[in-house]
Length: 245
Image (cartoon, rainbow, N blue to C red; front, side):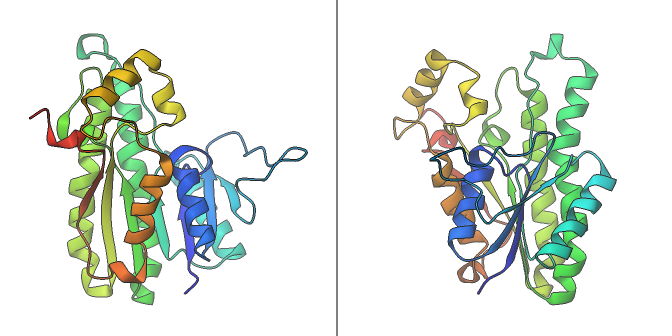
């Protein structure tokens, strides 16, 4: 059955792969971008977001969240599937971390998730069907030096999602979390090839993951087949979250 799906931060990386997977599954898909619209296809290229509605939205701004949802509702219909993926980093060791570094990451990654879920949930409850998936991170359970703000925001999503799962389950709205490990995205590329190789070496499967592998887990969680799965934390991390032993 075709549903309306909204993926925040859906123009690259995990968000883009998820948008493509849900579009290819027959859903009507919208994605948000914070500032720069997706470029579309050039001459002789395939548009990665063909048949996907792209709307501007900074998830730290409640008014922009409401406008984005209103646009999707007008163009495609009420949001039935929400994937809260938008996120940022501001990595620094605690002794060098400014309060604004901590606050901005939490506001985007955690409170931004609250804002979009709060906007989506009422319609899902009324329809007695809905799917919400939060994209967290393996660092939510392992921690990572230099990422106290990021880890805190991603760990917060787990508690938030499980609370929502209990609140919404009786209305057939499921709420789940995926915790990606080291995934080959622009965010990971910023740390350099040497560090990426080190992470791959300590990952049990011995490599980085792909955005498509995370998208596949999300596609299951938002499907009709996952109706009995809620409050789950699904690792897509090559075993990294198990620790070194």
